[in-house]
Length: 78
Image (cartoon, rainbow, N blue to C red; front, side, top):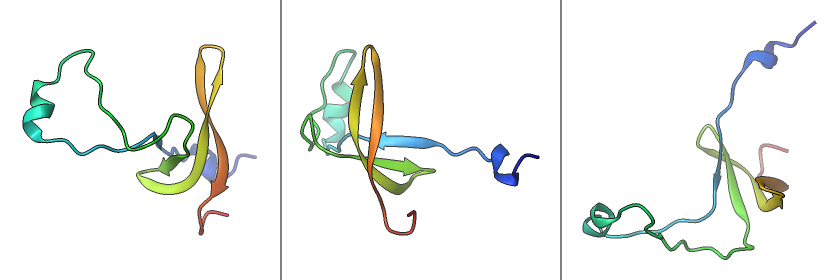
């Protein structure tokens, strides 16, 4: 027998970093533009569920796939 939550869908997002840039710079960007983020290559990432922070993690590379390893559940989600 299936649980009621089996059919609930959750949108997951992973935030690698953030950047603030002037609108005129954003409008001039084209294909191949690079946006510098405020994080390091091996720094932690924030995991969001329906736009709400739920955990922190680390990027994991496996062949040609990119994943996220959860390192910490945020308070209220443990």
